[in-house]
Amino acid sequence: MNIGSSTQTIATPLMIGDSFYSLAPGGGNPPPNKSDDQELYKQRDPSVTSESKSVPSLRRLSQIRRRRSSYYFSENERRIRANDKEFNAQFKYHNNYIKTSKYSLFTFLPFNLLEQFQRLANFYFLCLLVLQLIPAISSLTPVTTAIPLIGVLTLTAVKDAYDDIQRHISDSQVNNRKSKTLRNGKLVEAKWSEVQVGDVIRLDNNQFVAADTLLLSTSEPNGLCFIETAELDGETNLKAKQCLTETIELGDRHDSLWNFNGEIICERPNNLLNKFDGTLIWRGQRFALDNEKILLRGCVLRNTQWCYGVVVFAGVDTKLMQNSGKTQFKSTGVDRLLNFIIIGIVLFLVSICALFAIGCAIWEGLIGQHFQLYLPWEHIIPKDYIPTGATVIGLLVFFSYAIVLNTVVPISLYVSVEVIRFVQSFLINWDEEMYYPTTNTYAKARTTTLNEELGQIQYIFSDKTGTLTQNIMTFNKCSINGRSYGDVIDLRTGELVEITEVSGELSGFRVQKANLTSILVEGMLSCVCRCPFLAQSAQKISVSNEAVSSNQTSTMTFPLDPPTVWVFV
Image 1 (cartoon, rainbow, N blue to C red):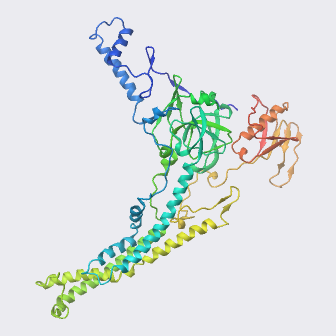
Image 2: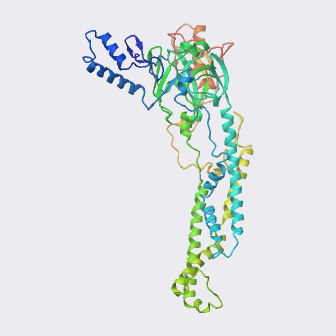
Image 3: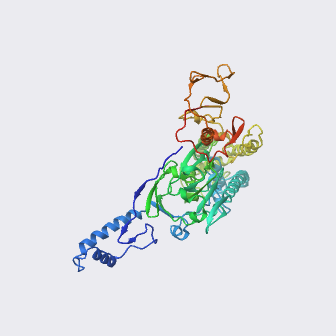
């Protein structure tokens, strides 16, 4: 099955005279200066004998070059040259190291405290602790508030530190994955974090793609390969990618791949998974690049023995990391409900304190002023004007009652919620009922702050049934030239149906008469094995008494003009 070529030569290199100007800064021959322009113009136009006569023409030639230069060196594009570290180093592209953790050893304390005080209860008790440090309004020692607050902050900090340590471990595992990279003409194993933009890497079957890569060559005919994008868009069905027909000839020859010096001009890093615009300049020609020639980080190579590609985006510039964004503090529905309840409790507390303060100010203004001998006023209270003094006493009493009635706000509620979440995360990891035997995968709680959000689905947007179901197709039956392979089951009765040829019809399916040859059978099975859906489930397909595996038929080709073939799935 010939997919055809999707490449297109869109332009020829810029040739002036006998020189070829490189489209990369610092590469090839630099553009000539004004004097060189004049000499070149004189060579092209012998009639020009003086500098004064050639000024208008030279100006037009310079304007053309400036326009071309502004196009080729736009700030909105990215330039990569394969196997040229010195050229790529001048742009200071990011390496392939990633970081999804939120804290470091030095930033943990300030950032974690900032996040914790976003909870109203913690912020309330912090303000309460500050008020207790003022002797004029506090009747309790600050220790009574400091100890519970420090206990809550410490417990939450330990839980957050545990979550972030798990992120550091996950980052370390990803960054230390091995990738086969071409260095000095030899294929060596390097860590993912050591992969640089412009490196040529090799991917084997069932291997994750280390970085956003331009596909150069594959083990399959026509430069095809199949990838699984479950970690990008959640779809498990395989997608086909095809490299340029001009680069297929590179194959898996390390010397040819090392000598590949193509220059890629493409868009800057973005988070659009289904869009890529670029141009490959190689051997004096320019070829258009689109998303069908790009393997994104996070994809898995399937049903393809090997493939080679040149890294275009690495690390935080990859589309996977561009979509992940910065790790932020997330609050659950329970947190938002608790904040709403705390606001109501605080408003209730403020109203009670205000009522008591107003009552105290009225009593001091009418009665209390006559008992200063027994209940003297503080020295900070003005005694010359009684209404002013009573007002100041009422204001101080407001804060005093806020301190005395601080137990109205349940700070222990946050402690209980944090302990429940922490323990529940371990119960999720230990639950044997949440186990998927097909891939030997257990449930894993990657955070201990979002447990109660599990299963809380509010909206479902579905464009097809495959979004909510599994797209799995299994090989059931095929008929080639009237000869049946496999069994046909009647869905209504559940019984096997015997296929017999009657008047050129095969159980209701018309079969074209043609010679059945071994090449036809092998070609048909080759197409079946190449099908992205069937190749995942069909391990062996038998023809007569001879087993033909998908690996053995992977290099077979289908006949150019085959007869009709019926496949029942």
